[in-house]
Amino acid sequence: MKRQARPLLDQVLLPFVYAKSEIESEAVLERLICDFAQPLIRDIVSFKLRAFAPRVTSRDGYTLTHARDAREAQDLTLHFTDGTVDATVGGAAPALKVEPRKRKPYIPPQPGLFDPAED
Image (cartoon, rainbow, N blue to C red; front, side, top):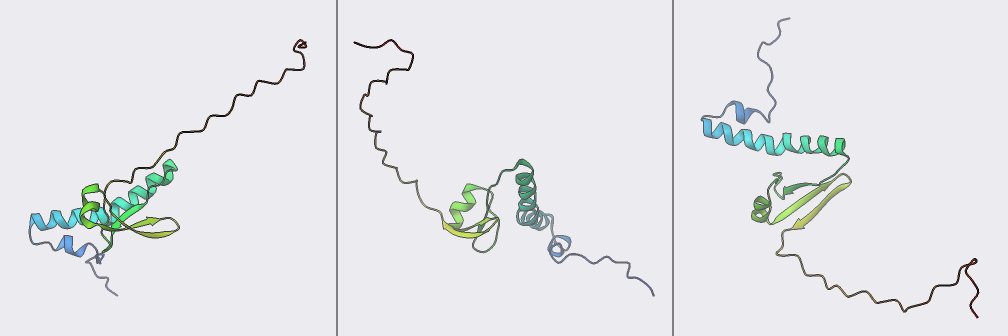
């Protein structure tokens, strides 16, 4: 039985392999890195550093790595380890109303066990 000499290509790589121009090839490669390599690298680094940042994608599935891309997409999906959450890009964060802390009334300290007695 003769084996096929030509290796099977992953379906994801086909557009990159068969790109007709250098520009198209670079665009496809960038999309491959953003969609497949970068999320995997982020997950590995986050695990090793014991840190976590959710993966952010547009609603059509493209991974977003820049704030500019998130603002353009408007509707986002945040991918956490326990599920996903849909989110929308908004304007400036609302100002939080901070009330000053109320002061505690002055209570003189209790005398200690070994303090001299007061007359």
